[in-house]
Image 1 (cartoon, rainbow, N blue to C red):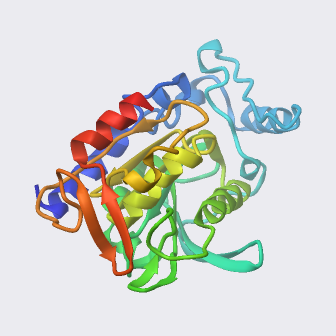
Image 2 (image 1 turned 90 degrees about the vertical axis):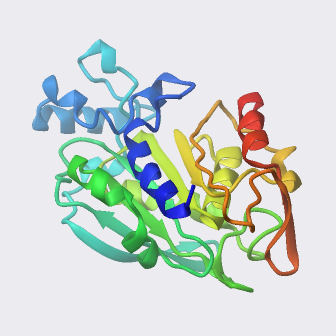
Length: 286
């Protein structure tokens, strides 16, 4: 399967991203973005946001519909004025470093109800802006009001990249950056913190695999494309809870061998892929 076709399929996957979820919060995915509207008005919704956010810092929703209880977890951004539509370059501080991302707010977003957040990671040498142009997600999710964040990697041997262990840029805390990014978006936009997802292609998919292992407390599910688990870190992959992983793979990119094996995606930073089938099997065990 060619990578282009793989990414087109990946766009459609966002509508069923939580279908294979391990917990109820995952099943309440972007396919049900406005389920609370039937029983919660705009004013009542704000009251619920305020009271839940003050409830011992738990942020648990108190929706009147018992079937939705604990499914919607509104962020602090739900108390702010609704963001206008558009694509904004945002810079945040992460430790002693300044990092940046593109915040994509679709016209359908009005801030009246918590919406999903998709964090989309670019491939090596690319940027948040280039990923926004190439990403198939907005065409599918913009109409649902889904907010997206597209982070920028740090300079590495082959251009901007992510640090997910043995590859592909050294001495960069991309896990901390991602957590800070999600926290920042959540203060600006009305996000359902139970519906935060990570997607990415190629080395961006490698970062997504890394997040599934190390940030399951933040992400409900992930969808890496064209990148598998790697032997160097797979043995230490221990999510804090079961997490859904929707993986897409092709067979023509020799840098990411379908059957697995060594690869030098970045010179001097060798990695060993488990392979497409073994990677999925390992996730089933994890």
